Amino acid sequence: MSVFPIDSADIVAARRAGSGVVKRTPITESLTLTERFGGNVVLKAENLQRTGSFKIRGAMNKLASLGDAVKNGVVAGSAGNHAQALAFAAKHYGVPCQIFVPAGASLSKMKAVLSYGATLTEGGDTLSDAVAAALVHAEKTGMNFCHPFDDPFV
View 1 (cartoon, rainbow, N blue to C red):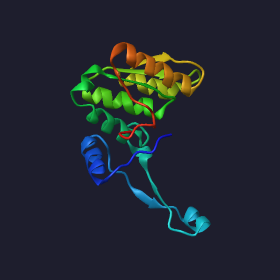
View 2 (cartoon, helix red, strand yellow):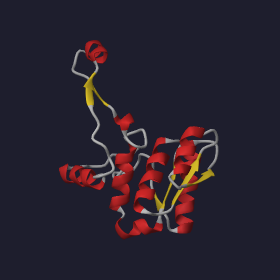
View 3 (tube, rainbow, N blue to C red):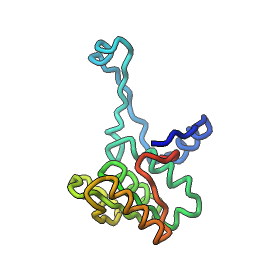
View 4 (cartoon, helix red, strand yellow):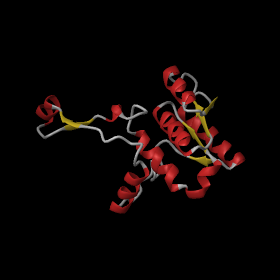
């Protein structure tokens, strides 16, 4: 995994990219974890996002970062949450989305991806296989490759 320098301007841009789509979710203190670890532990309820996870934040930011190239569509390899978020973001932008999934990916997550209008293709046995298949597809088609985690915009 890579390390990317991120500054306050990047955070402001990411917030702007998700405006109107990303929900402001509540934060709640976990008394059990606070007690266990001896410090104030709070949890952010990102499961309340439209796609069920925090991944929508990165997906919206990634598509916003593409500028005019977003019109070429997006492609990724993912086993679930990134796939859902990217498909949702692509639908929001009105662009094509191709997702490569590993064998055995969650049926409920794949149904959600399809409901957002993305195309699904099995991309091997593992997440690494699916990511590699997505990268090959991006090179062949000109679609924008969106890594599920190793990307400063995600």
